[in-house]
Image (cartoon, rainbow, N blue to C red; front, side, top):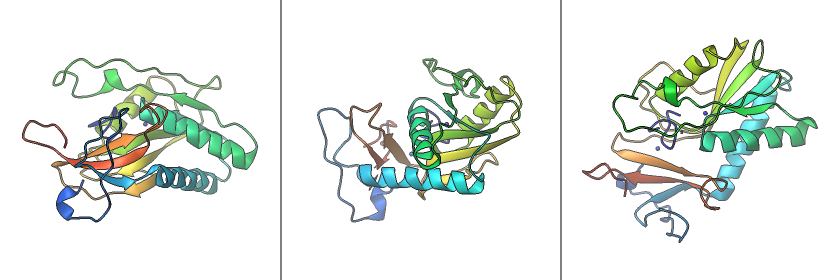
Length: 220
């Protein structure tokens, strides 16, 4: 569901202010921590288009996703999985099983970082044995969040196959992990950060933003 720069891998669950891009900076709002120095890579409309494309790619590559189960990695990956499920249902006329997979206790950096709040793992009633499980996360970065997700899956059942869908792939993999479905391939430098905002968890703000880490490790 990260790897990823938000909750997942940073987490999702991820820029290039130094690149001199012409995209306008995202204005700060009273509901977000978006700083003026951040640059918008995807706005709300672009995020929606990316998810629509991923949904159609899933249907095409799985020939209708008959035995597929979507598992989102909290927090933002869970919301993205729910949206993908709704879009696939709108096309196919049937609901796809959607759940969540918390990977907190399977991370390999538990000893190195402060205690994390546990998310929720909710497996659909039909389970995952023999199914095609599609993990969903917001940002794919080092690959360590997805490694943790695979370990978590192993304790829950034995899927027929596992695929990965991410909104943003920012590169810099540390493990041999690749996404099957990507909304946006975003080349970044290590000092850059990717921030994903999803309306359901970010007070209505929706965008993918790029920033740069300061000497204290805080994005600006």
